[in-house]
Image 1 (cartoon, helix red, strand yellow):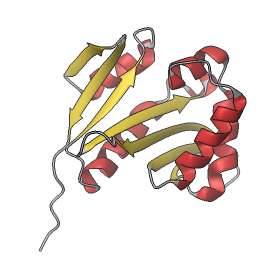
Image 2 (image 1 turned 120 degrees about the vertical axis):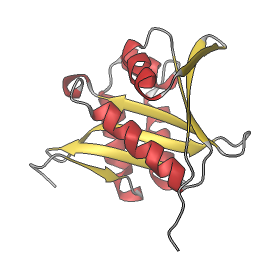
Image 3 (image 1 turned 30 degrees about the horizontal axis):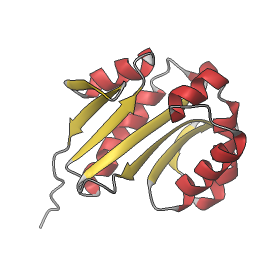
Length: 159
């Protein structure tokens, strides 16, 4: 919707717009998001996979452009664990978008049956550290990165 700002679940039809969002991140922000220099082709492939491979991905759009996004993907090596990742464009930061995405993904993870979700980030990513500490009491160093863990409460269906 052009002109309205809102959150939504990414679908395969959003892959190009998600790629555009990730490509608008500057070099430093891309490194913080992907833990390395991320060439354009890798970002385009990542966006396509994220919108199509079954992971939970939410976007926040304003004026028809995705300006923030978050992903929850199952950790293939650890049952019941989901991994979170976020990106918010510079001009849209400090509006609570990261926290709103984090909350939505935590809730989605609980509904999907995850026991916990983890957020891994580089030590110099102060915004992500603040976000993580707002949701987790457990932030530890791991292999040159920091990792925050959020234990999830099982969702019980009435009936």
